[in-house]
Length: 315
Image 1: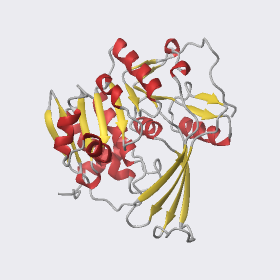
Image 2: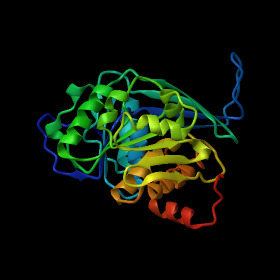
Image 3: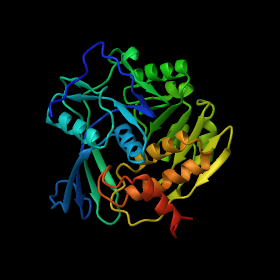
Image 4: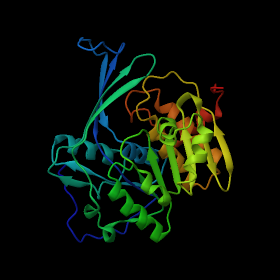
């Protein structure tokens, strides 16, 4: 089916639960028996090709959980770009605000180890969104915004707009890269990985990192730590802890992105901090049982069934 950007001046009256802004790569992932030594060759056990990116995957998670999600991103006018959009449309994520550019679509190539689920990702990202690409008058109605900070100036513009119309901003940062801290004062929910929080704050514990982050971000702060679960703090709920579920891990790619999507679902349901963190932990665990960032994303019924059963959690 042909696809293209909406013509300038188009008006959308559709309302969404969440609008996400972030990179939208295609993921090419190889399953391997063990990570090879430099200069060696190995046979791949399997390969999966899916749409990727933290924000797009979070929007797919929201859609599978029954929410209406939309994505603002940039892709190239190439086959990879068409694949990314087709995948999102199949998941009922609105793609009306995806911008088609002359740069090539971003590509993430990764390797995940059978058994451990450990993975290594290489990202080729030459396509960006600038503040000028965002026409605020064309944005749909939405209840909250989810950002990844890759194109920080564009994210800042959208975050300021969110403040103006008084809707929450959720921010995802998984590792140290460009300095995204200038946006922290505009963030209502900073949900980050310990791989970011500890080195950025130069602390040794998650609790200490949260204490430091609170000086920069006035909103709720959640730090995820894989099998060690997640710790959060909000002025309303105080400290909250969520343990990680034990599952047969196939691939951890996208686990944090699914956590974000499920966390936003809890926000939309007005759940307290600990409940939305534990729900997000369950959704992320289920994702890890399938390869790639999207295959294992559960729907609402699956998460509820998983949480209602006899599940083992990490201590």
